[in-house]
Length: 177
Ligand code: GDP
Ligand code: MG
Image (cartoon, rainbow, N blue to C red; front, side):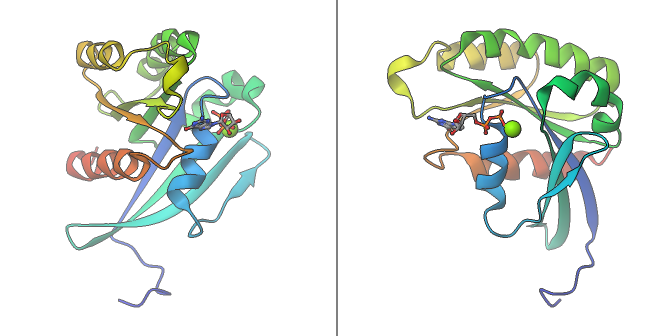
């Protein structure tokens, strides 16, 4: 299969969720590197990038949605969630309130999204060791309680970013809701 051949075996929609400034956009651009097309849909206030991954010898095209203009988030909820089979819930390990708010984002997801959606909890900015306010164990035990996969990342240092995205896509592929 040639690289310029745009056919793919599977197409998945993955969404990024979490308070503003937690690093969602940086995680997205870090993961997609130079191989992405960032498009902006002004009607619903989101940006999305697409990336092709290879799992089980299959070409998996993943469209990753990111909110821009967080004030509009409430209004875009339905369009944002529609068709998504995976979500990355992101908080900032240096801002405790962003971790507290994960509860709200989860409630929102459970109201609007497919109940079988594949979820990952991400504690981002793991590089800022000196001002951590959400300890790894705290994030981990919350994730266990809520049955979420958990990982800490640094978009800045490029730590665990690839792992977080490929892991969630891999589970989306295995689940195929
Ligand atoms: P978003 O609002 O969730 O999309 O967050 P952004 O990606 O725009 O990031 C918000 C701020 O946090 C920016 O100043 C980024 O440079 C910074 N940032 C994002 N990821 C990291 C990270 O992993 N480590 C550190 N130290 N800063 C980060
Ligand atoms: Mg952003």
